[in-house]
Length: 370
Image (cartoon, rainbow, N blue to C red; front, side):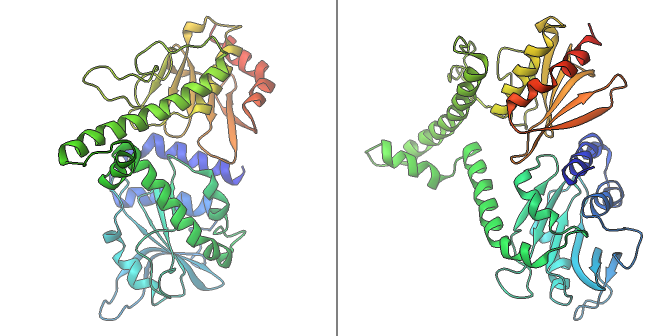
């Protein structure tokens, strides 16, 4: 399997097992060790490559341990500290990493709960680990633009100098993207003032600011909805017209709209409350549905969005899959197709039009449930 395929395979495992992994030790065994071995390519059973419970005396702190140290050419290169899969990662969890960073040759430190991996280096001061990660990898929301940099840390292509050189840009671009996402979902005062001051000429009192906070949140949500609908119109043709209040950019009285919950179009699409459905996923769903309609009634074809992929199902039943759209990445995308034994094979696609090249396989999958 390719690097990306191995990553998405591990992502699937995490998505299916995360809720039953309760302890730090279970997190290490189920998620972190497979990440070290299958993604980074190091032999977790070779003490010359991976040292569990790595110990080094740090000042008056004797015998403290870091969960894993990864070695290359007998030198510590990467330190890894693990937390339980259900734990939210905070910089306070990285105390051992801070201490060990200054007394080893490691230039990369990783704080992880098995799903999210925060990568740190020493951009702000030499041999002192930064407070903020330069790269954040969430295996349930993989941003494939980060994968070339992650691949530089693998055993096969280890390139520390290259990733350190790119770390500063990665650090700030990633932080800005996360801030934008936070502001869109819960606008802060400065963000609200930025827009309110340009459309409202009077003094911004506390009451006016509170009003504009809701208006900015609503405007951001409607903007995203309109972008989705614009792409849907192109995918479905000029006759498409949204029929529900949220699809028209309207908010039912007493409710705030959200592109991450509820049906995105009139079709049968289920979306988890914490999942963002992209425009391409909706377009891809419509293309696959149109192909499968030659074998089945359209009403039987449903979509279900999850964090890792968009599933296209018969009768909204996970046991009756037609295809999966692995579109969460920005550089490469895949169409997952199933054989008669429900084994999935992923096919790389460059554009949505490439889905039509797999039309016969999609129809064959749909015929099994006719």
